[in-house]
Amino acid sequence: QRWGKLGRERNAAISNMSLGARDKGSKLRCFGKGSENLQHLFCMAISYDYTVYNFQIAHEERRWYVQKRFSSFSALDDELNERYPDLMISVQRLPPKKFLGSLDPALIAMRQKSLDAYLQSVLARSALATCETVLDFIEMPLDLRNEVSHEQRHLQAGLDAVRT
Image (cartoon, rainbow, N blue to C red):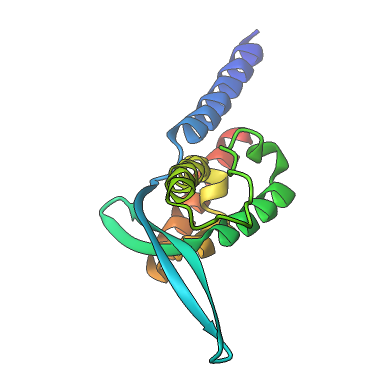
């Protein structure tokens, strides 16, 4: 009976650590900061307009800005769905792609809100927020990336120690 109680306590500790890690989420946060319509000149003759969405990313006291096109979000979503299908089930969905009328102010405003919710949803899940694909996407500074990687290894070591 003594081993049974220790076994139950150990399993409860593992569950609590796992739940704590999952519920706590990552320390990364994002804030939508509007959008800009830009023009790209191709071969000095042909130009096309496109929209970039601006975000401020924060990790504790550190903050930096990124600009991303909708197509970048779509590529990120495709890669994360391929690599982490179980985690992506609960992530906010991206709005549908639209090829004509993509510069419409109402569409841009709706996309800004949806992209902000999507990125917040990704960053709220530690396993996604700390993967190289997401760290590259949010352009996390290298010194901060090393710090986050160290924290993740420390958490994993704690989980492994409790499991054994």
